[in-house]
Image: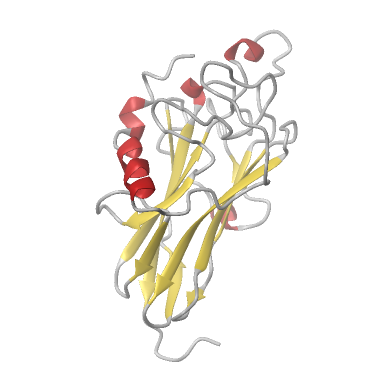
Length: 224
């Protein structure tokens, strides 16, 4: 399974994950709990998202949602928000099915592959807000997987999506396309490779990530 092309997209991620581990951060917040995992040498025999534990470029794919101050430093599992700044959320996606399953009947191709994001509208002091991404496909097993990044603040802050900032990156024709705001609904929006049509072949060559920005404001009133 080739992973050479993905290096241009994921440089520095391994360092970010190592930093998190050394800091003692909680790495796996998502689910489903106790789901089967795979390795780069032995990928899955079916469609499944982000279950490889030793991706040579990314690391453990179960930790697929990270956040950072926009354009600043390494991505993290948890960050303290500051009013007036923007933050960038990144979600990695990879259909772990063997590449050989993309041919013939195409049983390794994810169908109706989608991503959905859930972002709190506000965070109060003492709260630990959760930003969640869910990856799904109609023929995946499990059908959905999810992961979370955490946010805190010293004072009450509100969060708003920066319009047009949700972009998908991959080696395919979808690279650089802006995702619709339906990303932030339970149904989410389609992923893909040749097009954003829900068809995502298996193998790291077809993986990618979605990033979007959140602006943090200091509300003029207490959010209840």
